[in-house]
Image 1 (cartoon, rainbow, N blue to C red):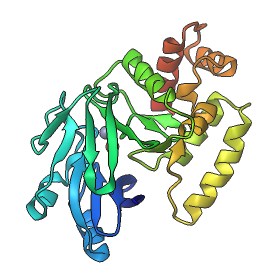
Image 2 (cartoon, protein in one colour; image 1 turned 90 degrees about the horizontal axis):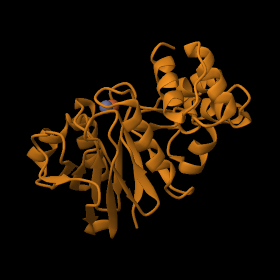
Image 3 (tube, rainbow, N blue to C red; image 1 turned 135 degrees about the horizontal axis):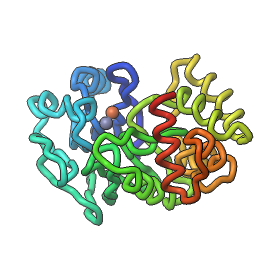
Length: 254
Ligand code: ZN
Ligand code: FE
């Protein structure tokens, strides 16, 4: 049986490690040093690297890990990551035999043009697309692409555990309360997230059910979200993609 643990990197990145007693697979190792230290301390052998998108804080450790372990590197086929050995796209699946664990691949462009997610066994590794109570910036994609990608993730089962690439939860809640001050879930979430952070615990994983109830970027059809997004832009907004674009822009300037 495997379990999942975070290795912290940089200021707020999480490198998620899928591990059992002897093996480990890592998702988005932006930095090799903390991963290698963890593997040594726990006496684990690396068996795979999974990348969600090409940003350096997610792939920067690939090369150094490959110098110590010869392992497959899974990554998005529509992005150029020199160390990737297995190029993936929507509909592909991968098997991590050591953990009897399979993931299917979802294309979720928006943050980057070729961003992918890994979904299986009620786990979702979604990089910088869906965050707890927030979403990634639109560096290479359009609002429509990101909205569509987030909707795709929102359709996964409620119980899906959501493993995001960064600890952004408190700042995201702060913004979400501006967008939807009447949402009671946000009040409770703020209390529990603050407690976790005071203890230096991750606020992750989240769940799809939780995100649907608190994440403003998944709630673009809620009257209060529409109302406040319209206020922000100074004109009435009708369709959910325009609401999404407005609150994404609002968050950038928040
Ligand atoms: Zn990124
Ligand atoms: Fe990132």
